[in-house]
Length: 386
Image 1 (cartoon, rainbow, N blue to C red):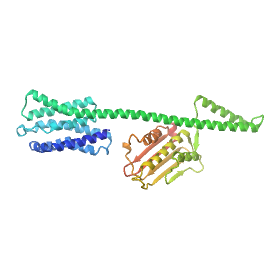
Image 2 (image 1 turned 180 degrees about the vertical axis):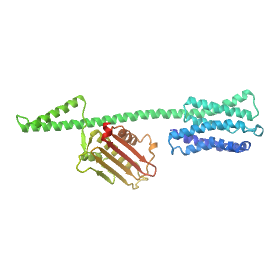
Image 3 (image 1 turned 120 degrees about the vertical axis):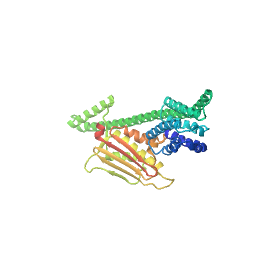
Image 4 (image 1 turned 30 degrees about the vertical axis):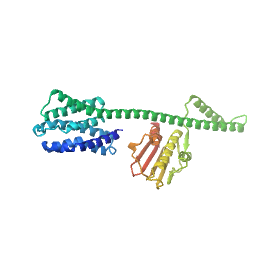
């Protein structure tokens, strides 16, 4: 929302300045060239430049630049007192019509109380300057000019402040919804883990039962040990303290195929260490597989530059006893990760939030308009233990 309002602010300023361009040119003759250039720069050019850069620089940098421009604008307005010849300028200064510009910029950065103080200060400077330029007026007329200036500025400043307030409320609601979605996803993963563990216990129980039947009246030591392990796992299920189950490389590869619905990108490569067994916690495997499937589905749905266009997609999975690295890439149209739309829940929650909130896991999305997209998923056992 901040970026949208910066664009609106810049465009509105440029259009309004174009309407009073005649006044700006006429009054430039009575001012020092540096002051005219400085006033046009901070009141007209700077907002237009910031609007053009709204989607190219971080929001924090935009806010700093807007605040700096507002401070300079107030200083430039005050400097008119020392560079103006009232005898040569019977008309009011063009800043009278532009004082709301800086106030609107401040409204994008500071709280409303601070914005109101700045707006009053700017309006007072410009109104007093206007009164001095016109040779002095009746006190009531000067006060009315000040009130008119304030009213003109406050209308736009208040509109911007309300828009930002509404945007922040929407962001808070969306953040709550995302947190609820993450909790629901986590709960589903836990439920899947518990079901898998229960199935594992059932299998072990059947194995013990078969061993008892084979041993006859005197169970062997191995059978007694197996029975003891089953009883321990049953106790864990009753207490809710289920130790994580594990999946191997073959199971994980099958999970990746299932998560992507069989729509595996061209160029899938899986590297497994020869002679070593890969085991990872089932909850990690579930999260990575779901994120992998989400990355594949997003590429299939959004990567094409135009309907039917060819897109080169690759997936690379490197498995090791202590780590997993997954890279899903395409050379499609790409997008701006900083501007992920609220409706892109798959990227925001299904990949970034869910994976990064799982111990030992990390996710990154690297993309750019026209440069394709790369989704990186990883897990480190040491990081899980930490």
